[in-house]
Length: 65
Image 1 (cartoon, rainbow, N blue to C red):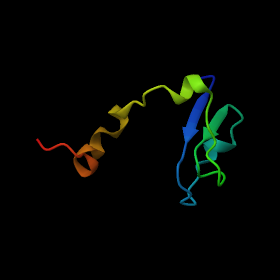
Image 2 (image 1 turned 180 degrees about the vertical axis):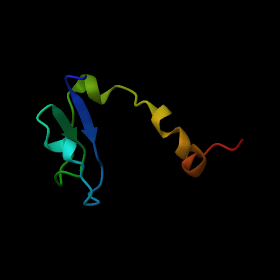
Image 3 (image 1 turned 30 degrees about the vertical axis):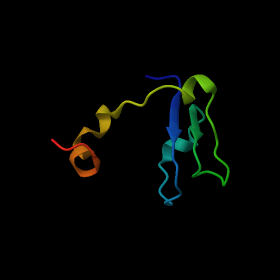
Image 4 (image 1 turned 90 degrees about the horizontal axis):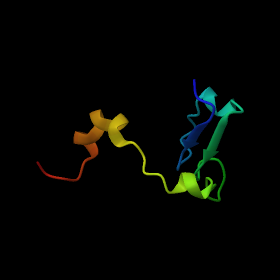
């Protein structure tokens, strides 16, 4: 369905999905090497969609209701 997928992981927890072996996946972050692997500038400046983490909001949110 998509022509490109971006996968960022900031820490190496030893858990990697098979998707990172797919040639259409562009990966970045610190999990893949000791040096931060940056995406292209236009991708680095896109705000992430936090809606996919909605169920975790109460666990990790910092705002009081």
